[in-house]
Image 1: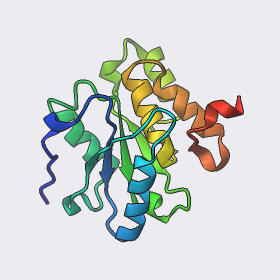
Image 2 (image 1 turned 120 degrees about the vertical axis):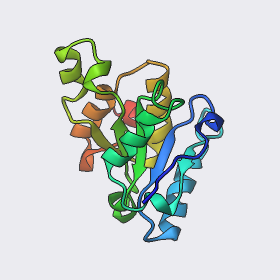
Image 3 (image 1 turned 90 degrees about the vertical axis):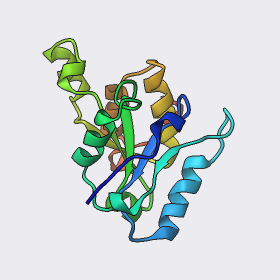
Length: 166
């Protein structure tokens, strides 16, 4: 099956990339999209969606391969989000956050170990997608900051209001 990305040059700055890999329920997907687009204190949100049935059943490795091979995404994108079967079946609609960084992107083994201490993936509620993406692209925080927060959160899902709990 041929899986291709839309023209990634059209992706705006600081806009998160979300792959839909489960096509079992369009109603649930609309719920996820609505939650992704919900305005917050900073205004409107936009997501760059890969919403093509050719991606149905794609694995994290399939997504990463496509992202890293794309000259516009592979260079500056450190996280992508996947709306998979778990997302669609979860009441939280928790997406998978996946780091695109590899061992080669890290200065040494210690940096890679810190990056992956809680794994290369974690779950986030849809409202967490934009804060995660923006903070990573601006280098305000690191992937491991968010994955550590998810690791200790209820249901192991990152919550957008995580700072309020501090």
